[in-house]
Image (tube, rainbow, N blue to C red):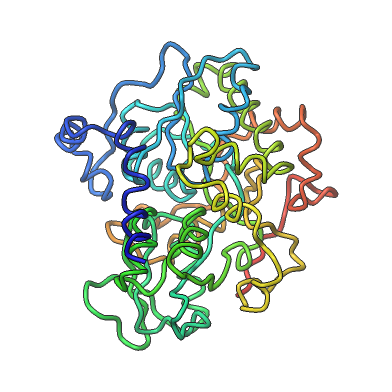
Length: 410
């Protein structure tokens, strides 16, 4: 077990050391007020615009949420559209990815859906959502030997989330409230009717659970699968089994590109949409492609990435991790259309979600306005017209593929 924990702590470091911020870059970023910006206390830096030479520069966290961007690069879909593209750059945390995007290091990223809401309306940063990166793909895990069988058992416990402005925080707090618990942010022990929340970077979560520093965590794959395989974690509930086919990460770009380089942006989205359709049909192949045995974009063994993408079997129904088999979800699914109904629900939910920092910007924020202003549907709509097979995805209603009703049920 100790060797496994050491491996968890070091497995990612070699890859990130080569590609993440250097110490000098980090200090420069903090000197610009980057840390304060990421805490929501000041404006994000308005620095050099990414890739004026039109090279696609991708920043990503090494998680399955980034699959569409990684597949589009690995399969040559950007080049097929006539674009030049650099090798995707992995970073170690959401804060680093946000900072890199805001600073102009990247012009194409995947971000947790609430992050662009915060960036655009709290920090006045010109970000645009171009498409969804995936649906589902996350879960809540607890210690395999713990007595936690349901969300109500998280009273008095501590759970890690990857970022305050995340779908994970929204879905977790919804489940806790539905179970009669109060989400709190505190350093000490939670009271019996409370669940204490804290931020942990995704790669730190399995080791923290194994060491007893947290009682559970909610995060994107492959860290749930990694926890199950390496530290005896047990899946408490898949998030896609609470909010049917929910968005998690979205594909984001600088608004300036959508205005000044619409043809370039369209080609970019065409490549991403094609990658999502491929990924939805070839999950096992994609798992190998992006794993350590493939491109190494996710520096974990293929067996773990495969589990993270495909293991949604009957055993999870027996434990209660899946309660809505009839929804037809996968462990992770890929479809790019950014349903306005989901964006509106997210904005409403953010106002009810406990986070650190100033949330004044959420007051009076019109969900319908956000759905139209934050998300630029022109490019994904055009790309989907070129790829009619997207409606074959089981998460898409063929009768009304561009409209849906959001379903949340604990």
